Amino acid sequence: MRECFEIRSTDAGGRLGELTVPRADVTVETPALLPVINPNLDTISPRRLADEFGAEILITNSYIIHGTEDVREEALANGLHDVLDFPGAIMTDSGSFQLAEYGEIDVTTEEILEFQHAIGSDIGTPVDIPTPPDVSRERAEAELETTQERLEAAEAVDTGEMLVTAPVQGSTYPDLRERAGRHADATDLDVFPVGAVVPLMNDYRYDDVVDAVTAAKRGLGADAPVHLFGAGHPMMFALAAAMGCDLFDSAAYALYARDDRYLTVRGTRNLDDLAYFPCSCPVCASYSPTEIRELPDRKREEALAAHNLHVTFAEIRRIKQAIRAGTLLELVEQRARSHPTMLDGYRTLLDHAAELERTDPVSKGAFFYTSHESARRPEVLRHHRRLDRLSVPDSLLLTEGDAPRGDEFDASWRVEPPFGPFPRALSKSYPLTAEVPDRTDRAAIAAAADGVTRLVESNPDTEFTLAHRGWPATIRDRLPARVELVDLTGE
Image (cartoon, rainbow, N blue to C red):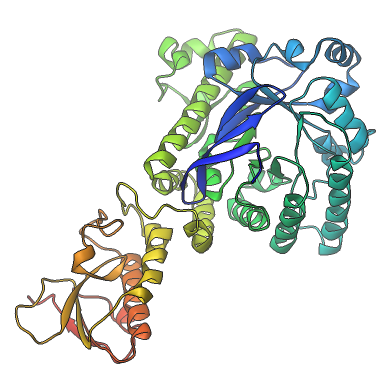
């Protein structure tokens, strides 16, 4: 187990955890947002981030500090915490972003880690190679090899109590991401950012982000704290948490404010398009859109940045509560309706339901069927797998109706979409207490049929009869031919 990270609660791939940052002498509750601070631009002060917004950790760029003489000298003399006036944990990036943008930087991994340690960073970052999406496999493999060499070099640097990250690269090749995760996990490093996904998010390729993160996590250990570099918009934080990401850094609050853009969890609006604020944060409760527009540029930017932060931190708290309550995937389903590509991302996440099922609690408060994607949730998959364990009689009625009064069958089980068949004695057990709409959709019926098929195929000597309420012919045709069918719709 990694001593710096402890998982307290899980839901799907999401987890509530505690990241102990010894150099700062703080413990950060995860999922956690790291607001990005540009040491040369102070839209919202770090002290205000802590006092007003509850930020426990932030991130700034050590490469910019290293290259800015007055800031560098002050940081070396007084320490980063004094320079920023921030009481929580401070993570520093290494210049890898600048490397990706401009093609070269003038520091090595060893030099920048020693510098990060010297200025008092609590979590340092080596110089990895952020390989962009869709490059050739040869380039991705070569740059991954360089990143791995630099992680090994980072292990040799004396960083004292400073935690050190091990970025996971591999472009858009899931097998390389998994290999990179496995290599990073084998190091003595502490925090594991999934890198070079910002271009994917900028292009709304959330399905590819999901594939990259889930592949990385297959290589990483269960106790590895995962950082999604450049997560950006709060609209996608719930999806990222459900993938198993614990830390998110974002400069969106400030960058969007600079362009008069107003954040909501469903997307971004231009200030000029708003007649009313759909929010009750302190900024929106104090100003109308017209009043914000009339503020001087600097004041308007600060007010919008503050609103954007309130929305962002509120979403992090909402995600934490959802994990605690066991409703994270229901929150993800709500957010997935914000944008078609978010829905692509959620559907891709459900392609990995077998991996999510491993950390999903076996019992929760309730299962709410809120979209046809709900039929693919880990709870449904788990129920289908457990059908193999159940003892069945020689003849069994599976029915959406009431139990028969006669003795034509040895037993009668219920059938409930999306789960399918189960003994009536389990009717009060999670997740079979699910709240499902009366107007059952095809996805739920198809999932129920898959459950029937699994039970039938696991018990070749049992005679099965399925009494259904008008299941479509295309779904009935998926059932094993030996299942006798009875349509209850004429009752």
